[in-house]
Image (cartoon, rainbow, N blue to C red; front, top):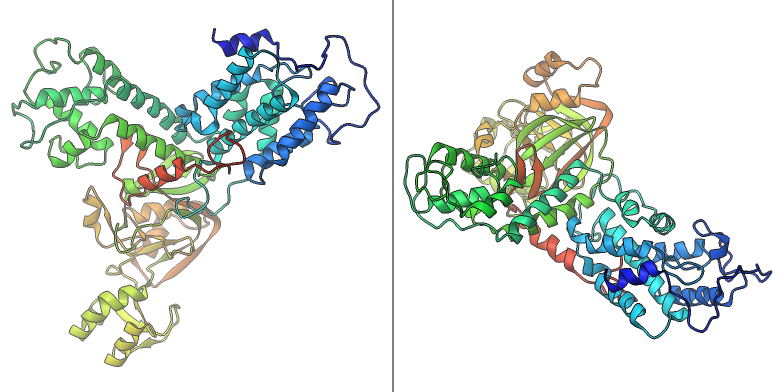
Length: 603
């Protein structure tokens, strides 16, 4: 038992020179130091019982609170003490430590399991203070107890805030969701933690409730275990590896795939990444001759299947061959994958707890859309997203889908019209008609169509006139678009360039999201709309003129950005398409100097 535990369970933490007695105290008619009604302490805990030590502690706590700021953390802490007449949160009426201190330190010490860092909440400093209290010549004075009590409360709330909504503050990195996160009652969480003595249970209520977060927490533990066991071997450069070959690099490849659970050890199934830890422990053992022998140089069918499994989890072309792209992904260190998971846990904390009963979510680096109903994915398809240069990246945000447009016009953004269409129109007088473009004075369905004269083309370049494309099979938006009006002018739409959906990397748009199966998405979106069955949707797609359908019930659309996530295939990783991971990590590690050294960064 360490010094802290011995001190805690001894329960002997009394004030120096106060004459505290175990005899019952008489209540005093003297008004309390603070008038707020307590919600979590008993009458004997409040400083209105006539006990001078209790009054001294309350006054000392009030002095500590005067130094706090008005940010989220400090406001919640101050609110707790106001509710409880400035009585200590972590010590009882006699100045003895409550068991909640131990559960708080236990929770802070495990912050890394959530992708956070215990040092950011002052864990080491608090632990040293408590160790010093036990080793000191006497008990803490009122001021010392008050400082430590407020420090413990700030550590709890700081961790609670980060766990609930993330470390990264408002700004360009943090997405704008169409509904703000509802405020959390951090003061109430602190009350529950100190009242019940179970800090872990109070914190659990604040963690993201999403299955994707929970599964990624498990993945973090698994990959940390792999990294702690030494990681995996590198696969050296060389010719393409494929079935039937013998190559000196094959043993290292087998060990690498066993480490991540893509190839089963001789004694396991290898279906999950945790099998990789067992593989690391046994990979140097002698194995029977055959496909389970990690020393074999033969690239066999079982190894190719493991490579395909790895490629699928990493969004690579699935061909069972090891070329430069697959080899580069194989050689990313396990420690880097741990970092990637940690960053993506932070992104989960930015999401609202309630995503909606029906919603659409696009994971940009995965190039994939999923539609959810009743908490279950009911539709999935590939997408094309914005290019990673020239400000064409698809933004990360959410809004509510309000209407669907069949056979839409494409209102060409002025920049695209000036840079891409005007030069073609000047070169070829029939270009606009051949591509179904028309010049208009404004972007409305009933806008007057103007002749494609050189003067009007000049006005398009100047931004005084506009270009739109008529609906139909050649339209850049395809046959339907799904509108969730937003400041970025981004939406989901069909595409005539169907060949792009066969690519492994699909960042080809100007920022909008092109969907692989627009008819299926239309059926999902309109499934609760009266008189809109599959047959009517097909008619609207392929016949007639432009038709706009207002939704009876708006559907949330989330354009999200996860480079690490877990699905039924296992732990997935994707390339950081827009180089966002480094910026998120830097923001997570940024330290703001608060009024005390309790934790890094007040919110």
